[in-house]
Image (cartoon, one colour):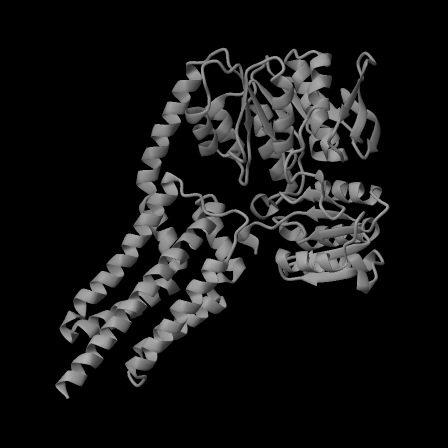
Length: 542
């Protein structure tokens, strides 16, 4: 009898160790996922909590399963063996589900992310460790069982462990940031001849940055902020890691989600020149009004020295109606040509790209340009870059050569042909009301095959979210022959717009994910068809 009892005890001990190990692995994976969400929200607790409130992630099936397992393990009349089985099933199910997930913007384990992850892991370990110590009097198996319960509970509060760790590290991060910012300032002060060009806008700034860098490189040793390094700390990192003494021009992309964000970057780098590509209804969830967006974008122009130059896009009413009297201001336009100094005219599209003329209003001179890029948005971005390049002394021949040899920017209205005869228009990086309309214009001009749109719609539009996505759907009804609406986020708005535009029901397909949309596409796409991917929601909105 004693022998059987010992075997059963050892068996239970082994099972508890296995369950605890699985729960530890699950907690590690879950903490990394939550950290990814915090990172995508710029480590800002307010933005993260807004996402948490809107996403419903705390009541997902996995977290509800975890809560059931946690509370069941604490109910006296439920046998421990049954509770163990429940926790084991939860750990296996949740771990398998999380490991199978793929993310558009996966976690980047920066030093800061590592510090937050380690701190959150220590917090969870303290909870489990203290629980084990306090329950040792119940025996090894009792302590192991309670540890499993504690680990399950830590999973249930994982959404709060990560921001708690972030909060605890606030003094550390501030100290580190001050050090890095100081180093960046010192590097910039050591290069007084460096010409710094700031670029901001509701959209178009990244593309314009790439185009301007390509053109300026014909004359200057030029550095641009890589990727989406458009925050203060992103610029600091660029200065510390990439800026070299031989660089002559530094192009700084400046992003903003709140008033003051661009001013903060300008106070660091002190740009002499600036481009504003657009002022539109982007990030209205944080800015609230278009006037607030305008004021924030013009923080760049307001920071320029009197001998500097501002290049602004007059196609946007909230740029055209904003006077600039502190610095030389050059206005460019494709459509709203009144008051513009430079105009793109005689635009022609072909299967190999675009041609257009840059007209200088003051003297009537014209510069004909060819480019492999397509779409009015790209013409506008090129025009803004050309105006700035001219202001910085690049001659027209060098400009024309650079523009003709521009490379398509990935996921920003780039066109490629794939095996099977399909033409892909890839505008998946981001989407906004102006850019999406231009992308639909490009799709509408293509043929002769079926024109297929795959999209989840647009995000971060505040109170105008529904109306702008409905208008997008209305435009799509005439531009596309088949529309696949992905996800739930904007489904009703786009579907209503498609109905308004007269799209027949059989031409509107609904998919819960991009993987499902791809399977649908494979079922009816044929050689010669054109597929537009318009936006791809980041993980924070899935």
